Length: 260
Image 1 (cartoon, one colour):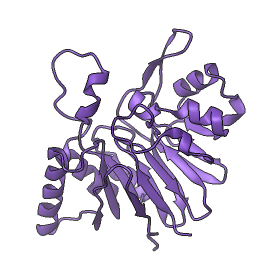
Image 2 (cartoon, one colour):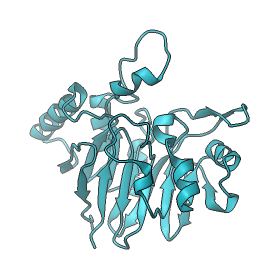
Image 3 (cartoon, one colour):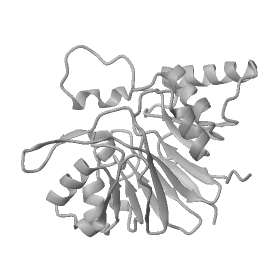
């Protein structure tokens, strides 16, 4: 079977590879206001990858791992939280930038991410750790980059040159639907990358297919701006990923291998 991907809103993805293995990345599902499914719909999960501890990324990881026995690839702070929630240590693979791991036959390559990762553990202790972006080796010719909420930084070019991700989820917006979940002063004006920065990230990574994300409404202003900038860069003859897929939550995409 061909590999495929489903967008679940914000930065949550379900990927099924050619071996019928199900990979979840940042499974924020049950309390996600725009996610069309519930986590209990997953009867079998072969791997969960968590980039960092923010609730809209860590999401339902613990519940899914407890119910299905799925292994989790994550940072040290998330491992500490999972252990206190009853996940066996043998089910967790903690890692950090460039320490590649193989779990259930799936290679996961953590790469640099400019963000933060903090949470309060069930026992009340405060924990922080190093956030990850991931390149998940889904199949031959399919190296899926998940940006992990990174801000723009110039070494994305190096990551592209060295590791050659083929498909990539790049945040370009801020999901306003989540704002009621948080108490804050003032207002948030952008996500970790705005549309211009997200396009630069996709160009620097050398992606074949870019999936703009970190939204629910595919018609929101930031997504429209990204599409406009993408088309303008293309018309100027700049390199842009040949394929740009704006997805709605719940939508599936076939992942086509990119072979030399």
